[in-house]
Length: 264
Image (spheres, rainbow, N blue to C red):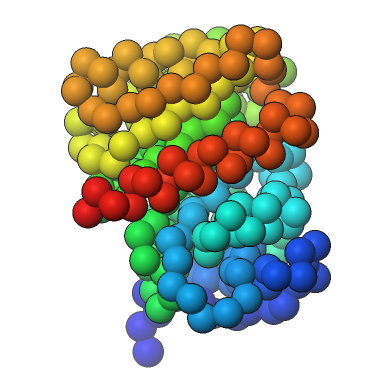
């Protein structure tokens, strides 16, 4: 029997912090690998939009947090958050928006296969911003794309984050000077002509993990291409927003997403 990308191979119930949201650790198929992720679904059979949550970081930095996934599910979404290959028991090796983008693409197909899911929205935080944009380019029928504190230019990340250079050279193959095509491949700014979904950019202007320049470059490119884009810049915040503000932004972006479900 042929196993297709996004096909669910195993599911194991996981303790949920919210009694109204069911969590399940999913093993799914992604280009020949068994990859894992976390599914959060409000209890019941009501059809609702899907929400692809693309985490930031790499390996144990920026791991998917069950409480965060349940938080988005409680806004009325069926949420799936891939761990990416090589993480938490999954096969393969994560390579920072290289081949591991296939794990996001296959996760999109997984959500699409769930009978309760209607439209699918794509969300990326930090490094997940690149993954979200690449997935939106791959699936132009997506209802919306949201990038929060998101990377848009991988070369800029190399330039800004001296602490990440060793890791980036290891997983990408070298420096941007020696391997410009490998960094360009991981930079969705060069492919935004193929993006159809409306984009929401959320960024703290004081962000030192992913500078606001990533957001400005993404916004400029989308506007040049006359793509639908909305920007929420927060002058006083860094990469991480205060809890009360964070909750409000989650509510607001959830409403923004649902409003864009009506465009199809």
